[in-house]
Image (tube, rainbow, N blue to C red; front, side, top):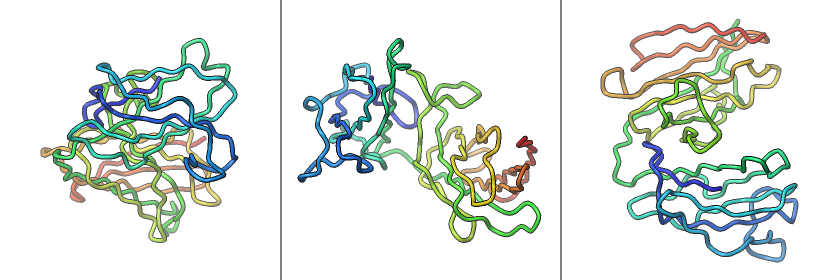
Length: 237
């Protein structure tokens, strides 16, 4: 089942249009035209009043939902396609994919910057990858699956040569940072999630989160409006 939602509130969105494609050419992402095109499954799927679109699919395959139209007043997503693998384990309960859109007239004045540094030398670390998720269900810990899952606000962002990646144009609310890949020579922490991090007019609309990494230690600190420090220690194993 595909579920289309408002990025900031999690409310269901009707009228979102999608195409479903099956991976057939072993190339990354959906190819929709040309001789090497993947195979389209069915026609256009439009989300209903509950924001959902349900299809039955064969297991053991890789598929892509491609958003071809958005509800009135909403922007096209940063990632127009969402890939997923359907396995036997998904058969009993089904697989729910959340695709979020943001309003075109909403205020997006917030920003979160990630800084990655070596824990001993303070040197910047490039190539660490983070995803940003928006808390839309009020649960303290991040929920990435299911009907009530939080919303992925931005795709993966890799730290640059200065050890920095920026997430801008963010609405007020609570966010989670998820470290999905690390700089060469380092290991992922046991708990790759940081948050919830609050952006609003009372605590500031710009956060800087700094990760000091060692082989077996990860210590993020959060600077609110770059004026206040909050230290957090986490063991990696």
